[in-house]
Image 1 (tube, rainbow, N blue to C red):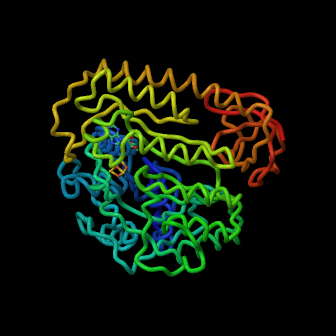
Image 2 (cartoon, protein in one colour; image 1 turned 90 degrees about the vertical axis):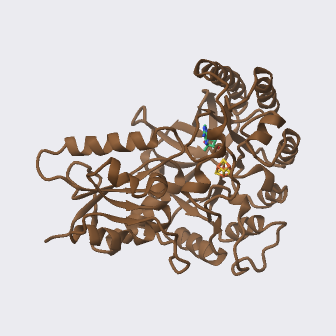
Image 3 (cartoon, helix red, strand yellow; image 1 turned 135 degrees about the horizontal axis):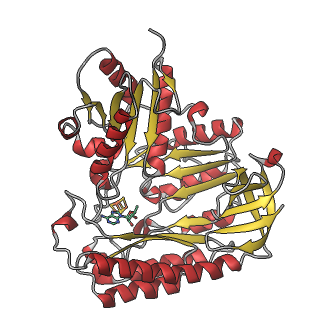
Length: 443
Ligand code: 5AD
Ligand code: SF4
C-alpha cells in the first residue's frame, strides 16, 4: 500500500492552527502524506473548536457533509481539538462513522493513533495529557504561512472565568521552557520567517518551571523576560496574544519601548465594563484595574494599538450595567473589538445561572456596542492617514491581483498597489485612506 493521504481541517483560534501544524509534522514524519483536498484524502481529521455554541452539532454536520460528498470509498474520519477533549467517547456514540478521537493533550501522538486506526482498530481514543518528554516541533513545510510563524509559549488556562470552557478543553496552564522557545525563534529566523506570534490563552501568565533560556534577560515577570529574550534573537517582528488583564505588568510596555521588534499591539480582553458583572464572570479585575493597565499602555513612547473582547448579555447583566460597558469602550478607544453575545457552555459555572437577558435584548446590546465601536474605529483608523507604517507583505489582496496586502506592526490590515516581488518583505507604506477595518496606502 502507498502512503496514505491525510487532510486536516482547522477551526478556531491560533492555538488550533499551531496544533494542526504540529500534527501535520508528526504525520509526515510517520509516513503519511498531507493533502488540501477533503474529497480525495484517505483520512480526514477535524481539528475542532468549542468556544462557540453548538460546536458539537456543527462537527456532526461537517462529518455528514464529508461522507455525502463521496460516492466511492469513505475516508477514515477523526476528531481532534477541543470538542474531542470535552466529549471524548461521546463522539463515537453520536457519530458512529468517527473512528479516531484525539484530545488536545494527545496532538503529538497523532501518528501512532492513526496507525492503530488504519491497522484495523475500530475505535481509537486518547484524551490523556501531554507527556513532559513530548516537544513542540513544527516543520517549516507545515506552517500556515512562510512569513509568519505561530509559536505557542503557554497552553491551557487556570483562570476559570465562569462562562468559559477553555480551562476544561485545554486543561491547566503549562508553560513551555524558554530555551526551546528561543531556539525555535532563532531557527525560524534562519529559515527566513519575518514575524513570530507568541501564542497562548494567557501569554503574560507565562511561568516556566526552570530559568533556562531566561538568564541574562531582565524583567519584572517571566513573560517580560521572555519578551526581551525573544527580541534579542533579532527576529524582525514579534507579536504576542492573548494577554490577561490581571497579570498584565507595565514592564511589558517597557519592553515594547526598548525593543523596536516587539510590535506595538496588545490584545487585552476586558469582557465587561461593570464591576458586578466582572465579579460574576470571576475575571479577577475591576474596571479601575483595567483602566490603569490601559493607562500604562497609552503612556508608551510608541503608539500601541489596543484590541479587546467583550461579552454582552451575561446572566444578570442589567441595561445600566451594559451602559457601563459602553462607557468603558468610549474611554478605551480600542483599535479593534470582538463582540460576543453570551451563550452558555455546558459544564461551566455560568451555565447554571438563569439567563435573564433575552436573545432580542442581546442583539440590541450587540448592535449598540458595535455601532459605537465602528464610530470610534473610523476615527482611530482615520488618524493613521498621512502616517508611515511598517508592513509585512503577506500576499495578494482578496479583492484584486493588482493590490498586495499585509499587516502593520500594530496589526492592522493594509492594502496597497505594488509588485508581487515584495511578498515576504517588510516595507514602509504611507497611509492614504482609511476604512473601518483596513487601511489603504502606497509604498
Ligand atoms: N459566551 C460568549 N462568549 C464567550 N467567550 C468565551 N466564552 C464565551 C461564552 N460562553 C468569548 C470571550 C473570549 C473570547 C475568545 O470568546 O470574550 O475572550
Ligand atoms: Fe477563558 Fe478566562 Fe481563561 Fe480567557 S482567561 S481562556 S476567558 S477562562
